[in-house]
Length: 397
Ligand SMILES: Cc1ncc(COP(=O)(O)O)c(C=O)c1O
Image 1: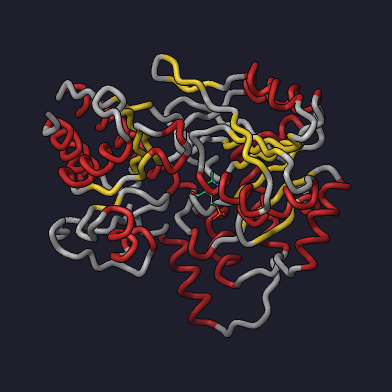
Image 2: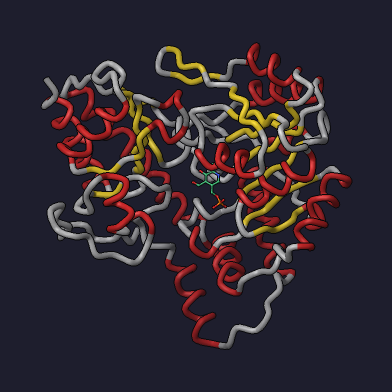
């Protein structure tokens, strides 16, 4: 795999990469108080994209102009094959809508099917944009917090049922695989969720953007598997995370229910959200056709990084606990037995390690004494980073 070479990165110097969010000195300054930091936060990768995708993009840019584009049959065919081979899902072209981002689709769905003040259930600690989107469209965030027992997160089904029963709580946003805690929900858990949604007429939005990064022996199950049991299920996804293409990605809303689909489609059309971008089309068609070997290597690297962190924590007898991820390229580190205060944890760890991770608080109060570490980087960086984090914690009296 082609990796960005970090050998010359000096943590005391300004990092001078592409103008991406993760390394933007101003953003680092705002978030971490200084820009000389090893950024291991926002969820994109330090890896160069797969060679076939890069070649296809170069050819596309070299060959012709950029007239209005459409997604040709070859795109849908490649996409259909990908979903069939990866997940045994039979994608039906007419049931797939496109929008610029997943969060765009969440806003549209919430606005179309709920009223101002209605409740939208989320399962914190969870991807912070869920909360932000709900607030922006003036709905209420209803929390069905995850339970953490024996280093393993589970769903509080009793609480979910109570929340779903309330008439004004009309939508559940599920994150599968779950960012940041790394759970890949199993069939039985999904089935229970679907039963609760059906019983209480709750629309289930399943955000499956992390579906391709499944680690170790875990198996991903899409909520699409349950659409015969409950047809108010909407799957939002894209391969932006999978192939490190968020800068040129659009996203998909897969909706089997015709009435829901038509309503969402009508709004997408009204705002002209479905227009494609030439580079998106080329990158993803190539990814579907030729990206599998790269993805295989990526997953192996992430697994290696997870094992490495576990090993470093164990040999150092550190009090930091890692919640072993089943999917995603994030690890969720538990600092509860070291710190009592979120701010102190963030300041201390950042200051003494020089590593910029997401404070768990971003994902909700429930993540307060945790940090999310992005491990989509080379193994040497991960080793360096975790050793620095361990040392930083040891400095705390
Ligand atoms: C669960 C989840 N959904 C959605 C996104 C972002 O998707 P988009 O940029 O298409 O809104 C992320 C990005 O980190 C994510 O973790």
